Image (cartoon, rainbow, N blue to C red; front, side, top):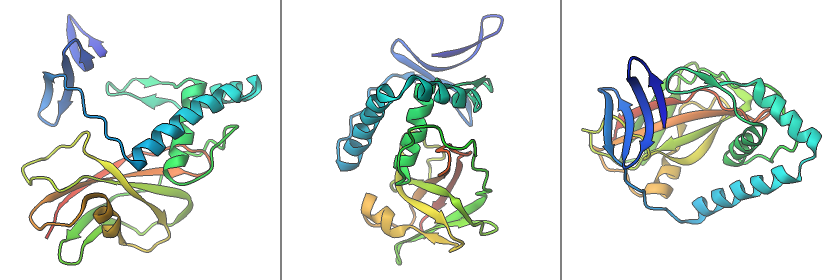
Length: 227
């Protein structure tokens, strides 16, 4: 659990005992810890197997290669919930980049790639139409970038009263920034979740990955009501 100390404690995030400490747009909250059901299908099995492969691949690296990954991790700090910058180990950087590459259908790294962090402006919107099974990702400015691939996440149909999602997002497909805006990924959503239904809400997330480094940019979230 992460704790921010004040006169006693000012904030916290994570699990402690039988409780989970987190926050949403209303503020901090505490809930009972619930162990999620492990989903097993072809996709989740492939992800778990690739993660285990990366653990073994790390062990097979030379000392020089592992040192290069440690140096790579030291150049790419991350920011946690409290705004504190932290750094991955060489091993976790190696696994993180290669899991990102797996998600976008690219080959694994052995040695670190470039230091390029994707910075494409993904500001835009999403809309969905039940009658035509459309889920359109609209990216303002219609950017193109052959080095960046977008991982498209989406939820199943949710009640319009839901305003925040945490664990419901699932990867449904990827998007190549070819300029073919809007990007209709309705077929991928149907394959994942079934038929669209008007009046229900869908949340989506766009995560950009640079193919030259395996590094991710800032996630962008949208939501829409199916019409």
